[in-house]
Every structure is written in C-alpha cells, then in structure tokens.
Image (cartoon, rainbow, N blue to C red; front, side, top):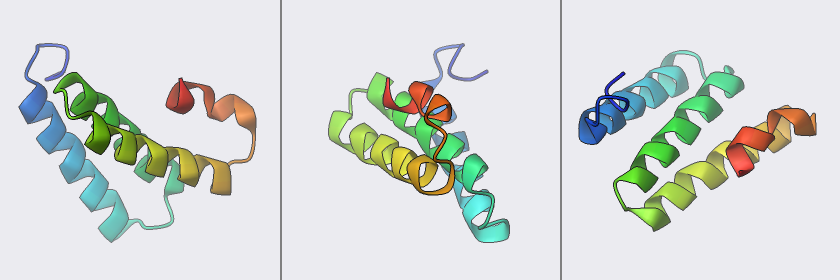
Length: 79
C-alpha cells in the first residue's frame, strides 16, 4: 500500500522488515524470502538505487532457481 501511495522509503523499510522476519523466524520459507527480496529490489529501483536493487533481485532470482526450478515462477523476478 505504501508503495502505491508513493511512500517508497516507508515501503522499503517494511519490505526489509518482512525479509528479516522470514529469514529469522521461518528460514525455510524460501518463496516468502525471495518474494520479500524481489519487492525490496523493485522498491529500491524506484528510489534510483540501481546497484542495490540489482543485488536484491539477483538474490531473489537465485533462491527461486535453487528451490523452485519451474521456470514459470521466475518470470516476474527476472523481467
């Protein structure tokens, strides 16, 4: 919602929080960790921090490729 309202810094902070929560409390929830990283990457890209965004998106892509080899799940991460 924050991202849709143009509150990108707040959105990024919330995505960072969700990533930390999943990684800490549910480390085998790879799909949720990857989704949080992808959202974090997309939001960081909107903020103009392209290298940082690329790093987040590549981490998300790596997780999906490692744990979910079905290529249909990768389209939205690699686009």
